[in-house]
Length: 164
Image (cartoon, rainbow, N blue to C red; front, side, top):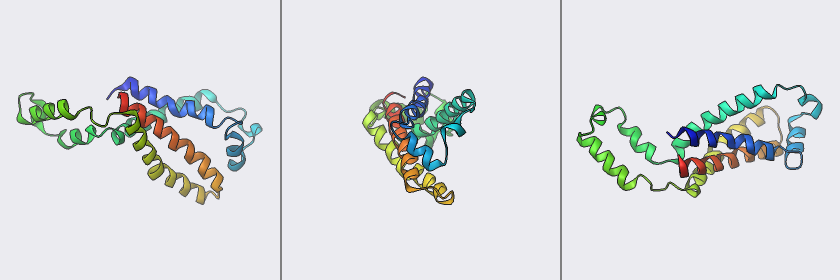
């Protein structure tokens, strides 16, 4: 795992949030559909909010990396095998040769963004929509919040796949 790249990817939702939820973009729609007002949002502990947001974004980046980088799948199949610890074993040599030959396949921003987008649509949209249905939120709310996360996942996936 490349922790500096994961940390950078974890900044994406925060940066996207400043843009996406700006009143000139979707902020007013989100506040109205969430039942919030500027007055009700005052007094929030912004340090706590930003720290928790970064921690949660970091966790998302760690897991998203495993969805957008195919090489993790091969390594996960053999990671418990004791032969992997011996650099002269047949398994270690096979893994090294495989990674040397195929380790950079599908490691582009475009490929990561594709998988990030797909994860956003297939995982995040249904979760947000399900919660919104029970919370009696509008379709606008679902599109604003899901759209934010789908784009954030696309950018995070691209960053992770290209550089992690």
